[in-house]
Length: 65
Image 1 (spheres, one colour):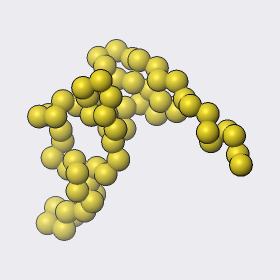
Image 2 (image 1 turned 60 degrees about the horizontal axis):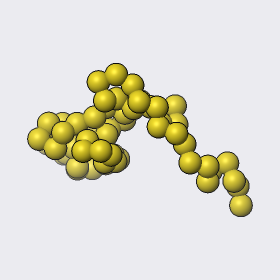
Image 3 (image 1 turned 180 degrees about the vertical axis):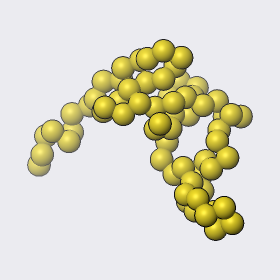
């Protein structure tokens, strides 16, 4: 068992509710302000990938920038 993968990472709070976690910056969204490509895998009509990875924390939905 690799213990490096099991260590909890600290959340670093940045300006304007952005956070940094594991070397990645995450942008906060309120539920009514989510981007159009949120929640689907692939849109054949627009030929674009959707956002399938996110997490919720303290009233915001965070998506990697």
